[in-house]
Image 1 (cartoon, rainbow, N blue to C red):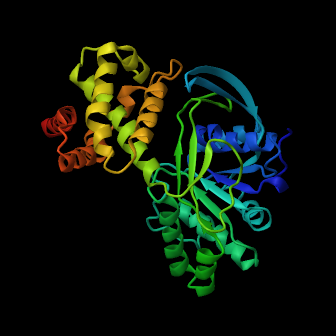
Image 2 (tube, rainbow, N blue to C red; image 1 turned 180 degrees about the horizontal axis):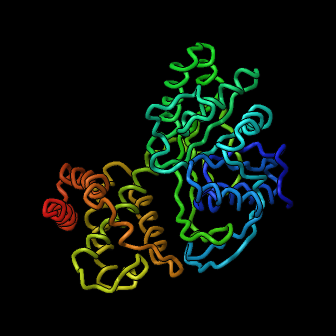
Length: 378
């Protein structure tokens, strides 16, 4: 299928990350190829960084880009390459604001975002600025323009790794709108005419291709919490409408993320080891066995207080398969950033649940204690 025109770009995507190129844009491409979706994507670059602006210019020039899918899924080795054709263009908010505002008013139906760890910071930003500095500020100003034009509301699908991300983003936008516009009808329009979805995303997009493109693992998930009136921007097996995100968040945080953090514990425990990547850890029989044991003996029995055991075991198997991906250079040194904090968030709740159920957690206890000792010794 040929690339969409700007008039067909009903999806406005805030963020140019390789993750979005290998996740949302790939799903929309597949849905368009299957004839399920007509909407294309207008990508918006939002940060002031010159490197980010150059990336946006490259994407606007090379709107069709390669996506390599490499790894293992459901026991099958996968090494494929396809050309993603869902991008209609890429604009720089600081340079093309007026055109962006017109597009939001005239063509947008969905808004998607993945604006990084600081994406929801507002600081002293104002929606009344010519171009607001923060993502919530930009979003508020753009939605106000659409509201003033008498148009219908939009569906907002944030992909930031923030719990209840749709609800949190709406709260920020309402706060800005009430302060800067003081328009009760606009507030009503935001809450009753726009739809703010909570979502969870999961896919490792490991490498960028130059000038534009990405390498991604076969596994992918875009879980979108259902609500009345929800329309999805595309149809794809990995885009799932779910009743609640809670079980998905719990499995990801306390199995996949916990397992990453436990491998860092093993890596720090053996400073002379030559292991650098997650896949190398999974190739080492001793490390792989210990990880499997901590999951089977301590983690899954604890999580069974909240989730059914078969779903936990299936996710464990998927996680270990993903970790063993021979094409993925996922560095333990990178995962080790903020290790003590990650232990508290990923491991400690599992330990507390285990205590309530009388389950011993010697390995998790040791990992938490070691992280605390390392922090205190600095």
